[in-house]
Each structure stands twice: as structure tokens, then as C-alpha cells.
Image 1 (cartoon, rainbow, N blue to C red):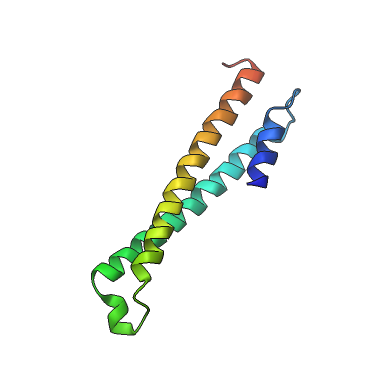
Image 2 (cartoon, rainbow, N blue to C red):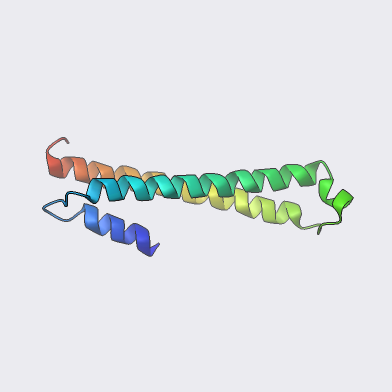
Length: 99
């Protein structure tokens, strides 16, 4: 997304800003938590459909479909965010002389 591109841009500049490491870690922690919530929500929807709970309370029959979408979007963006975080933090560490 545009925010990830901005954070990556800020982390690859030299000299590294004083607040840039905090910005990078805060952003990727937020991205991780968001993808975690999306993935768990999808899992809960799939399990609800597995136990036929939507039929009992009159919800649509597409609960498993939306649950599956949420589950896999959460997994996809979680892995993508983890890889970007690894790449950006490695670049920052190398710029500071630790890598």
C-alpha cells in the first residue's frame, strides 16, 4: 500500500532519521495486528459455518465463502508484511553499521 511504500522510502534514505526506526516498527506492528485480526475473523466465520450456526440464526449461506476470503487475505498480507518488515529492517541495520 501507499503507507508501506512511504515507510520503505523513509527507511532507505541516508542519513536515517531519528524517528524512522520507531515509524518502521510501529507501522509493521500495526500491519501485523490488522492481518491477524482479519485472519482470525475469517477462521471464526468458517468454523461457525462448519457447525451450522448461520442456519440457526438466519444468516446467508455465503458465510464460509467470506470467511475463507478473510482467512486467506489475512494470511497473505501477514506474510507479505513480515517479508517487507524483514527487508526494511535489514536495510536499516546495514545503514547503521550492524549488518
